[in-house]
Length: 434
Ligand SMILES: *[C@@H]1O[C@H](CO)[C@@H](O)[C@H](O)[C@H]1NC(C)=O
Ligand SMILES: *[C@@H]1O[C@H](CO)[C@@H](O)[C@H](O)[C@H]1NC(C)=O
Ligand SMILES: *[C@@H]1O[C@H](CO)[C@@H](O)[C@H](O)[C@H]1NC(C)=O
Image 1 (cartoon, rainbow, N blue to C red):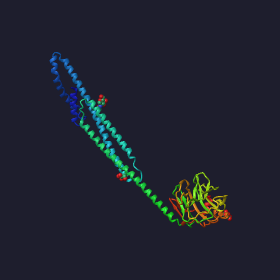
Image 2: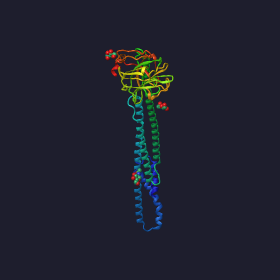
Image 3: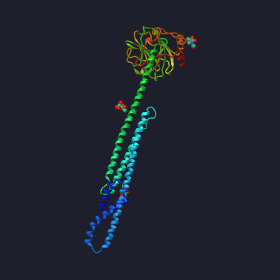
Image 4: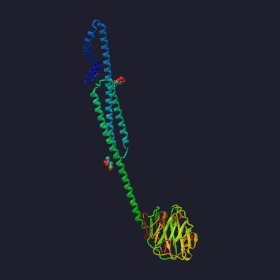
Protein backbone atom coordinates (compact mmCIF):
# COMPACT_ATOMS: atom_id res chain seq x y z
CA UNK A 1 0.00 0.00 0.00
CA UNK A 2 2.80 2.33 0.85
CA UNK A 3 4.50 1.26 -2.37
CA UNK A 4 1.38 2.18 -4.27
CA UNK A 5 1.48 5.73 -2.93
CA UNK A 6 5.11 6.07 -3.68
CA UNK A 7 4.57 4.76 -7.17
CA UNK A 8 1.76 7.21 -7.76
CA UNK A 9 3.83 10.03 -6.40
CA UNK A 10 6.83 9.08 -8.52
CA UNK A 11 4.80 8.85 -11.69
CA UNK A 12 3.36 12.23 -10.85
CA UNK A 13 6.79 13.68 -10.00
CA UNK A 14 8.43 12.49 -13.13
CA UNK A 15 5.54 13.76 -15.19
CA UNK A 16 5.86 17.34 -13.92
CA UNK A 17 9.10 19.05 -14.89
CA UNK A 18 9.54 21.21 -11.82
CA UNK A 19 8.62 19.26 -8.72
CA UNK A 20 10.44 21.58 -6.33
CA UNK A 21 8.36 24.61 -7.32
CA UNK A 22 4.89 22.98 -7.17
CA UNK A 23 5.58 21.14 -3.98
CA UNK A 24 3.14 21.88 -1.17
CA UNK A 25 -0.37 22.47 -2.61
CA UNK A 26 -0.38 19.72 -5.15
CA UNK A 27 1.04 17.26 -2.65
CA UNK A 28 -1.82 17.97 -0.22
CA UNK A 29 -4.40 17.58 -2.88
CA UNK A 30 -2.83 14.32 -3.94
CA UNK A 31 -2.92 12.99 -0.40
CA UNK A 32 -6.56 13.98 0.00
CA UNK A 33 -7.64 12.04 -3.08
CA UNK A 34 -5.46 9.12 -2.18
CA UNK A 35 -6.70 8.56 1.38
CA UNK A 36 -10.37 7.88 0.52
CA UNK A 37 -9.20 5.23 -1.93
CA UNK A 38 -7.38 3.52 0.96
CA UNK A 39 -10.30 3.91 3.39
CA UNK A 40 -12.73 2.52 0.89
CA UNK A 41 -10.69 -0.64 0.74
CA UNK A 42 -10.05 -1.14 4.46
CA UNK A 43 -13.20 0.17 6.11
CA UNK A 44 -15.71 -2.40 4.90
CA UNK A 45 -13.42 -5.24 6.06
CA UNK A 46 -13.01 -3.70 9.48
CA UNK A 47 -16.70 -2.83 9.88
CA UNK A 48 -17.80 -6.39 9.16
CA UNK A 49 -15.44 -7.71 11.84
CA UNK A 50 -15.92 -5.21 14.68
CA UNK A 51 -18.82 -2.78 14.34
CA UNK A 52 -19.30 -1.52 17.93
CA UNK A 53 -15.92 0.08 18.70
CA UNK A 54 -15.88 2.83 16.09
CA UNK A 55 -13.97 5.63 17.83
CA UNK A 56 -10.67 3.73 18.52
CA UNK A 57 -10.83 2.42 14.96
CA UNK A 58 -11.17 5.93 13.63
CA UNK A 59 -8.33 6.91 15.86
CA UNK A 60 -6.16 4.13 14.41
CA UNK A 61 -7.18 5.00 10.89
CA UNK A 62 -6.32 8.64 11.50
CA UNK A 63 -2.93 7.57 12.84
CA UNK A 64 -2.32 5.38 9.81
CA UNK A 65 -3.22 8.24 7.53
CA UNK A 66 -0.92 10.58 9.40
CA UNK A 67 1.87 8.02 9.20
CA UNK A 68 1.28 7.55 5.49
CA UNK A 69 1.33 11.26 4.99
CA UNK A 70 4.61 11.52 6.82
CA UNK A 71 6.06 8.69 4.81
CA UNK A 72 4.99 10.32 1.59
CA UNK A 73 6.42 13.64 2.64
CA UNK A 74 9.69 11.92 3.48
CA UNK A 75 9.77 10.21 0.13
CA UNK A 76 9.09 13.51 -1.52
CA UNK A 77 11.98 15.12 0.27
CA UNK A 78 14.18 12.27 -0.82
CA UNK A 79 13.11 12.73 -4.41
CA UNK A 80 13.72 16.48 -4.21
CA UNK A 81 17.16 15.92 -2.82
CA UNK A 82 17.81 13.38 -5.55
CA UNK A 83 16.72 15.92 -8.12
CA UNK A 84 19.12 18.38 -6.58
CA UNK A 85 21.96 15.93 -6.86
CA UNK A 86 21.11 15.23 -10.47
CA UNK A 87 20.97 18.94 -11.23
CA UNK A 88 24.33 19.48 -9.61
CA UNK A 89 25.80 16.62 -11.55
CA UNK A 90 24.30 17.95 -14.73
CA UNK A 91 25.82 21.38 -14.29
CA UNK A 92 29.16 19.78 -13.52
CA UNK A 93 28.94 17.79 -16.71
CA UNK A 94 28.12 20.93 -18.64
CA UNK A 95 31.06 22.77 -17.10
CA UNK A 96 33.38 19.91 -17.84
CA UNK A 97 32.11 19.80 -21.39
CA UNK A 98 32.72 23.51 -21.86
CA UNK A 99 36.16 23.12 -20.33
CA UNK A 100 37.06 20.36 -22.74
CA UNK A 101 35.90 22.44 -25.68
CA UNK A 102 37.71 25.62 -24.68
CA UNK A 103 40.87 23.77 -23.83
CA UNK A 104 40.78 22.03 -27.19
CA UNK A 105 40.47 25.25 -29.18
CA UNK A 106 43.04 27.06 -27.05
CA UNK A 107 45.49 24.26 -27.62
CA UNK A 108 44.93 24.28 -31.36
CA UNK A 109 45.47 28.03 -31.51
CA UNK A 110 48.67 27.79 -29.51
CA UNK A 111 49.95 25.06 -31.66
CA UNK A 112 49.38 26.79 -34.99
CA UNK A 113 50.88 30.10 -34.00
CA UNK A 114 53.87 28.67 -32.14
CA UNK A 115 55.81 26.21 -34.18
CA UNK A 116 59.19 27.41 -33.03
CA UNK A 117 58.47 28.69 -29.53
CA UNK A 118 56.89 26.93 -26.59
CA UNK A 119 55.62 23.57 -27.53
CA UNK A 120 52.24 22.53 -26.15
CA UNK A 121 52.20 20.60 -22.91
CA UNK A 122 52.45 16.91 -23.18
CA UNK A 123 49.19 15.84 -24.84
CA UNK A 124 49.08 12.53 -22.96
CA UNK A 125 48.86 14.44 -19.70
CA UNK A 126 45.65 16.26 -20.58
CA UNK A 127 44.20 13.13 -22.15
CA UNK A 128 44.79 11.34 -18.89
CA UNK A 129 43.19 14.21 -17.02
CA UNK A 130 40.09 14.07 -19.20
CA UNK A 131 39.98 10.32 -18.83
CA UNK A 132 40.03 10.65 -15.04
CA UNK A 133 37.27 13.26 -15.06
CA UNK A 134 35.16 11.03 -17.27
CA UNK A 135 35.71 8.05 -15.04
CA UNK A 136 34.79 9.93 -11.89
CA UNK A 137 31.61 11.28 -13.52
CA UNK A 138 30.68 7.80 -14.61
CA UNK A 139 31.33 6.43 -11.14
CA UNK A 140 29.16 9.11 -9.59
CA UNK A 141 26.32 8.46 -11.99
CA UNK A 142 26.50 4.75 -11.36
CA UNK A 143 26.44 5.12 -7.59
CA UNK A 144 23.58 7.56 -7.87
CA UNK A 145 21.65 5.11 -9.98
CA UNK A 146 22.42 2.38 -7.52
CA UNK A 147 21.21 4.48 -4.62
CA UNK A 148 18.01 5.42 -6.41
CA UNK A 149 17.37 1.81 -7.29
CA UNK A 150 17.81 0.81 -3.65
CA UNK A 151 15.78 3.71 -2.24
CA UNK A 152 12.83 3.24 -4.56
CA UNK A 153 12.20 -0.44 -4.23
CA UNK A 154 9.97 -0.77 -7.29
CA UNK A 155 12.60 0.91 -9.46
CA UNK A 156 10.33 3.71 -10.57
CA UNK A 157 13.09 6.23 -11.16
CA UNK A 158 12.64 9.33 -13.27
CA UNK A 159 13.90 7.57 -16.37
CA UNK A 160 13.89 10.69 -18.48
CA UNK A 161 16.55 12.20 -16.26
CA UNK A 162 18.57 9.03 -16.34
CA UNK A 163 18.34 8.90 -20.11
CA UNK A 164 19.32 12.53 -20.33
CA UNK A 165 22.31 11.92 -18.14
CA UNK A 166 23.26 8.91 -20.17
CA UNK A 167 22.97 10.84 -23.39
CA UNK A 168 25.09 13.67 -22.07
CA UNK A 169 27.63 11.23 -20.79
CA UNK A 170 27.89 9.45 -24.12
CA UNK A 171 28.10 12.83 -25.89
CA UNK A 172 30.96 13.72 -23.61
CA UNK A 173 32.54 10.38 -24.23
CA UNK A 174 32.35 11.00 -27.97
CA UNK A 175 33.95 14.41 -27.56
CA UNK A 176 36.66 12.94 -25.43
CA UNK A 177 37.44 10.32 -28.06
CA UNK A 178 37.57 13.01 -30.75
CA UNK A 179 39.90 15.05 -28.58
CA UNK A 180 42.11 12.05 -27.95
CA UNK A 181 42.30 11.44 -31.69
CA UNK A 182 43.20 15.10 -32.26
CA UNK A 183 45.90 14.96 -29.64
CA UNK A 184 47.31 11.78 -31.15
CA UNK A 185 47.40 13.54 -34.49
CA UNK A 186 49.20 16.55 -32.99
CA UNK A 187 51.65 14.24 -31.33
CA UNK A 188 52.43 12.44 -34.58
CA UNK A 189 52.84 15.81 -36.36
CA UNK A 190 55.25 16.90 -33.65
CA UNK A 191 57.15 13.67 -33.99
CA UNK A 192 57.28 14.00 -37.78
CA UNK A 193 58.47 17.58 -37.48
CA UNK A 194 61.28 16.50 -35.16
CA UNK A 195 62.22 13.72 -37.54
CA UNK A 196 62.15 16.11 -40.50
CA UNK A 197 64.31 18.59 -38.60
CA UNK A 198 66.82 15.91 -37.77
CA UNK A 199 66.84 14.82 -41.40
CA UNK A 200 67.52 18.40 -42.52
CA UNK A 201 70.35 18.73 -40.02
CA UNK A 202 71.86 15.47 -41.19
CA UNK A 203 71.61 16.55 -44.82
CA UNK A 204 73.32 19.84 -44.04
CA UNK A 205 76.08 18.05 -42.17
CA UNK A 206 76.55 15.58 -44.99
CA UNK A 207 76.81 18.29 -47.62
CA UNK A 208 79.31 20.13 -45.40
CA UNK A 209 81.34 16.96 -45.07
CA UNK A 210 81.25 16.45 -48.81
CA UNK A 211 82.45 19.99 -49.39
CA UNK A 212 85.26 19.54 -46.90
CA UNK A 213 86.29 16.29 -48.57
CA UNK A 214 86.23 17.99 -51.96
CA UNK A 215 88.28 20.89 -50.66
CA UNK A 216 90.75 18.43 -49.20
CA UNK A 217 90.91 16.60 -52.51
CA UNK A 218 91.44 19.73 -54.57
CA UNK A 219 94.04 20.66 -52.00
CA UNK A 220 95.94 17.51 -52.86
CA UNK A 221 97.91 19.71 -55.16
CA UNK A 222 100.12 20.14 -52.11
CA UNK A 223 102.48 23.09 -51.72
CA UNK A 224 105.15 20.88 -53.21
CA UNK A 225 104.85 17.23 -54.31
CA UNK A 226 106.58 15.90 -51.19
CA UNK A 227 104.67 17.97 -48.61
CA UNK A 228 102.01 15.41 -47.84
CA UNK A 229 101.45 12.58 -45.43
CA UNK A 230 99.45 9.38 -45.49
CA UNK A 231 97.02 8.83 -42.62
CA UNK A 232 96.09 5.29 -41.61
CA UNK A 233 93.62 5.94 -38.80
CA UNK A 234 92.38 2.42 -38.08
CA UNK A 235 93.87 -0.96 -37.39
CA UNK A 236 92.35 -2.91 -40.28
CA UNK A 237 93.52 -5.27 -42.97
CA UNK A 238 92.35 -2.98 -45.76
CA UNK A 239 93.74 0.53 -45.14
CA UNK A 240 97.07 0.98 -46.84
CA UNK A 241 99.25 2.99 -49.16
CA UNK A 242 101.17 1.64 -52.13
CA UNK A 243 104.32 2.97 -53.75
CA UNK A 244 103.88 2.81 -57.52
CA UNK A 245 107.58 2.36 -58.15
CA UNK A 246 109.33 -0.92 -57.49
CA UNK A 247 112.93 -1.47 -56.44
CA UNK A 248 115.90 -2.53 -58.55
CA UNK A 249 118.25 -5.24 -57.38
CA UNK A 250 120.25 -3.71 -54.52
CA UNK A 251 123.27 -4.58 -52.41
CA UNK A 252 122.64 -1.90 -49.89
CA UNK A 253 119.85 0.44 -48.95
CA UNK A 254 118.83 3.27 -46.68
CA UNK A 255 115.18 3.83 -45.87
CA UNK A 256 114.04 6.94 -43.99
CA UNK A 257 110.64 8.26 -43.00
CA UNK A 258 108.75 10.49 -40.64
CA UNK A 259 106.08 8.69 -38.65
CA UNK A 260 103.67 9.39 -35.87
CA UNK A 261 101.82 6.71 -33.94
CA UNK A 262 100.41 6.01 -30.53
CA UNK A 263 99.13 2.56 -31.32
CA UNK A 264 99.64 -0.07 -28.71
CA UNK A 265 100.81 -2.69 -28.32
CA UNK A 266 103.22 -2.01 -31.19
CA UNK A 267 102.87 0.51 -33.99
CA UNK A 268 102.50 -2.31 -36.55
CA UNK A 269 104.11 -2.31 -39.98
CA UNK A 270 105.19 1.10 -41.34
CA UNK A 271 106.21 -0.57 -44.62
CA UNK A 272 106.86 -3.91 -46.21
CA UNK A 273 108.48 -4.92 -49.47
CA UNK A 274 107.43 -8.28 -50.89
CA UNK A 275 108.76 -9.98 -54.00
CA UNK A 276 107.53 -13.12 -55.75
CA UNK A 277 108.69 -16.04 -53.62
CA UNK A 278 109.59 -13.83 -50.62
CA UNK A 279 106.82 -11.77 -49.04
CA UNK A 280 109.24 -10.55 -46.33
CA UNK A 281 112.05 -9.26 -48.54
CA UNK A 282 112.27 -6.07 -46.46
CA UNK A 283 109.88 -5.43 -43.55
CA UNK A 284 109.88 -2.93 -40.71
CA UNK A 285 107.50 -4.10 -38.01
CA UNK A 286 106.71 -3.58 -34.36
CA UNK A 287 104.26 -6.31 -33.48
CA UNK A 288 102.60 -6.93 -30.14
CA UNK A 289 104.98 -6.32 -27.27
CA UNK A 290 108.08 -7.14 -29.32
CA UNK A 291 110.60 -4.40 -30.07
CA UNK A 292 110.80 -2.97 -33.57
CA UNK A 293 112.25 -5.44 -36.03
CA UNK A 294 113.89 -5.22 -39.44
CA UNK A 295 113.39 -8.25 -41.67
CA UNK A 296 115.60 -8.78 -44.71
CA UNK A 297 114.89 -11.92 -46.71
CA UNK A 298 112.86 -13.07 -43.69
CA UNK A 299 115.88 -12.78 -41.35
CA UNK A 300 115.30 -10.66 -38.25
CA UNK A 301 117.22 -7.93 -36.42
CA UNK A 302 115.76 -6.20 -33.36
CA UNK A 303 116.13 -2.42 -33.49
CA UNK A 304 116.47 -0.22 -30.40
CA UNK A 305 113.87 2.25 -31.66
CA UNK A 306 110.93 3.48 -29.67
CA UNK A 307 108.48 5.81 -31.39
CA UNK A 308 105.01 4.91 -30.15
CA UNK A 309 104.48 8.08 -28.09
CA UNK A 310 102.10 9.75 -30.52
CA UNK A 311 104.71 12.34 -31.62
CA UNK A 312 106.47 12.79 -34.92
CA UNK A 313 109.76 10.92 -35.22
CA UNK A 314 112.30 10.67 -37.97
CA UNK A 315 113.75 7.20 -38.40
CA UNK A 316 116.35 5.79 -40.81
CA UNK A 317 117.61 2.25 -41.29
CA UNK A 318 120.64 1.34 -43.35
CA UNK A 319 121.68 -2.12 -44.48
CA UNK A 320 124.41 -3.53 -46.62
CA UNK A 321 124.86 -7.02 -47.98
CA UNK A 322 128.45 -6.95 -46.82
CA UNK A 323 128.31 -8.84 -43.49
CA UNK A 324 124.63 -7.94 -43.31
CA UNK A 325 125.57 -4.77 -41.40
CA UNK A 326 122.74 -2.47 -40.31
CA UNK A 327 122.24 0.85 -38.46
CA UNK A 328 119.14 2.26 -36.81
CA UNK A 329 118.60 6.06 -36.40
CA UNK A 330 115.90 7.86 -34.46
CA UNK A 331 115.55 11.66 -34.69
CA UNK A 332 118.98 11.93 -36.32
CA UNK A 333 120.77 9.87 -33.69
CA UNK A 334 122.20 6.45 -34.38
CA UNK A 335 120.79 4.29 -31.58
CA UNK A 336 122.00 0.88 -32.69
CA UNK A 337 123.98 -1.19 -35.17
CA UNK A 338 124.37 -4.88 -35.88
CA UNK A 339 125.54 -7.39 -38.46
CA UNK A 340 124.74 -10.78 -39.95
CA UNK A 341 121.32 -9.72 -41.10
CA UNK A 342 120.93 -11.68 -44.36
CA UNK A 343 124.59 -11.26 -45.26
CA UNK A 344 125.53 -11.48 -48.95
CA UNK A 345 121.88 -11.49 -49.93
CA UNK A 346 120.99 -9.19 -52.80
CA UNK A 347 117.64 -7.38 -52.44
CA UNK A 348 115.44 -8.80 -55.16
CA UNK A 349 113.83 -6.43 -57.68
CA UNK A 350 110.29 -6.16 -59.02
CA UNK A 351 108.34 -6.43 -55.77
CA UNK A 352 105.71 -4.23 -54.16
CA UNK A 353 106.20 -1.63 -51.42
CA UNK A 354 103.17 -1.36 -49.15
CA UNK A 355 102.78 1.36 -46.53
CA UNK A 356 100.96 0.36 -43.37
CA UNK A 357 100.51 -3.38 -43.92
CA UNK A 358 102.53 -6.57 -43.73
CA UNK A 359 102.23 -8.72 -46.88
CA UNK A 360 101.79 -12.47 -46.73
CA UNK A 361 101.72 -12.63 -50.50
CA UNK A 362 103.03 -9.91 -52.79
CA UNK A 363 100.72 -6.90 -52.51
CA UNK A 364 98.14 -8.59 -50.32
CA UNK A 365 96.82 -10.93 -47.64
CA UNK A 366 97.21 -8.37 -44.89
CA UNK A 367 96.72 -8.99 -41.20
CA UNK A 368 94.94 -6.34 -39.15
CA UNK A 369 97.01 -7.12 -36.03
CA UNK A 370 100.13 -6.13 -37.97
CA UNK A 371 98.69 -2.95 -39.50
CA UNK A 372 100.32 0.42 -38.86
CA UNK A 373 98.05 2.98 -37.17
CA UNK A 374 99.06 6.62 -37.48
CA UNK A 375 100.68 8.92 -40.03
CA UNK A 376 103.58 8.45 -42.39
CA UNK A 377 105.54 10.84 -44.57
CA UNK A 378 108.82 11.37 -46.47
CA UNK A 379 109.26 7.67 -47.07
CA UNK A 380 112.46 7.73 -49.14
CA UNK A 381 114.80 4.95 -50.22
CA UNK A 382 118.32 4.99 -51.48
CA UNK A 383 120.37 2.12 -52.91
CA UNK A 384 123.29 3.00 -50.66
CA UNK A 385 124.12 3.59 -47.02
CA UNK A 386 123.71 7.26 -46.15
CA UNK A 387 126.21 9.05 -43.96
CA UNK A 388 125.21 9.93 -40.40
CA UNK A 389 125.58 13.64 -41.19
CA UNK A 390 123.06 13.36 -44.04
CA UNK A 391 120.63 11.60 -41.79
CA UNK A 392 120.91 14.05 -38.91
CA UNK A 393 120.57 16.99 -41.33
CA UNK A 394 117.29 15.53 -42.58
CA UNK A 395 116.14 14.85 -39.05
CA UNK A 396 116.91 18.39 -37.84
CA UNK A 397 115.20 19.99 -40.86
CA UNK A 398 118.33 21.59 -42.21
CA UNK A 399 118.23 19.46 -45.36
CA UNK A 400 115.77 17.46 -47.44
CA UNK A 401 117.01 14.69 -49.73
CA UNK A 402 114.61 12.72 -51.93
CA UNK A 403 115.39 9.01 -52.23
CA UNK A 404 117.20 8.04 -55.39
CA UNK A 405 115.30 4.74 -55.85
CA UNK A 406 112.04 5.73 -54.15
CA UNK A 407 111.41 9.46 -53.77
CA UNK A 408 108.42 10.62 -51.74
CA UNK A 409 106.20 12.37 -54.28
CA UNK A 410 102.45 12.64 -54.41
CA UNK A 411 102.12 11.05 -57.84
CA UNK A 412 104.10 8.04 -56.64
CA UNK A 413 101.83 7.09 -53.72
CA UNK A 414 98.37 5.55 -53.89
CA UNK A 415 96.05 5.13 -50.91
CA UNK A 416 93.34 2.50 -50.41
CA UNK A 417 90.51 1.43 -48.13
CA UNK A 418 90.02 4.77 -46.39
CA UNK A 419 93.65 5.77 -46.00
CA UNK A 420 93.99 9.46 -46.85
CA UNK A 421 96.57 11.96 -47.98
CA UNK A 422 96.78 15.26 -46.18
CA UNK A 423 99.05 18.25 -46.08
CA UNK A 424 102.18 17.68 -44.03
CA UNK A 425 103.10 19.90 -41.13
CA UNK A 426 106.23 21.92 -41.80
CA UNK A 427 109.47 20.23 -40.76
CA UNK A 428 110.05 22.53 -37.76
CA UNK A 429 106.62 21.70 -36.41
CA UNK A 430 107.36 17.98 -36.58
CA UNK A 431 110.76 18.58 -35.02
CA UNK A 432 109.25 20.60 -32.18
CA UNK A 433 106.70 17.85 -31.66
CA UNK A 434 109.26 15.04 -31.43
C1 LIG B 1 19.17 6.53 -0.40
O1 LIG B 1 19.00 6.08 0.93
C2 LIG B 1 20.19 6.16 1.70
C3 LIG B 1 19.85 5.57 3.06
O2 LIG B 1 19.06 4.48 2.88
C4 LIG B 1 20.66 7.61 1.80
O3 LIG B 1 21.84 7.70 2.56
C5 LIG B 1 20.88 8.15 0.43
O4 LIG B 1 21.21 9.55 0.50
C6 LIG B 1 19.65 7.97 -0.44
N1 LIG B 1 19.97 8.39 -1.80
C7 LIG B 1 19.54 9.50 -2.34
C8 LIG B 1 20.00 9.74 -3.72
O5 LIG B 1 18.81 10.24 -1.76
C1 LIG C 1 53.93 11.07 -39.82
O1 LIG C 1 54.71 10.12 -40.51
C2 LIG C 1 54.09 8.86 -40.66
C3 LIG C 1 55.10 7.94 -41.31
O2 LIG C 1 55.94 8.62 -42.21
C4 LIG C 1 52.82 9.00 -41.49
O3 LIG C 1 52.19 7.74 -41.61
C5 LIG C 1 51.89 9.96 -40.80
O4 LIG C 1 50.76 10.18 -41.60
C6 LIG C 1 52.60 11.29 -40.57
N1 LIG C 1 51.75 12.13 -39.77
C7 LIG C 1 51.55 13.42 -40.07
C8 LIG C 1 50.64 14.13 -39.16
O5 LIG C 1 52.10 13.97 -41.01
C1 LIG D 1 121.48 19.75 -38.19
O1 LIG D 1 122.34 18.67 -38.45
C2 LIG D 1 123.47 18.97 -39.22
C3 LIG D 1 124.18 17.70 -39.51
O2 LIG D 1 124.43 16.99 -38.34
C4 LIG D 1 124.32 19.99 -38.48
O3 LIG D 1 125.43 20.36 -39.26
C5 LIG D 1 123.52 21.21 -38.18
O4 LIG D 1 124.24 22.10 -37.38
C6 LIG D 1 122.22 20.83 -37.47
N1 LIG D 1 121.39 22.00 -37.35
C7 LIG D 1 120.76 22.28 -36.23
C8 LIG D 1 119.92 23.52 -36.28
O5 LIG D 1 120.82 21.60 -35.24
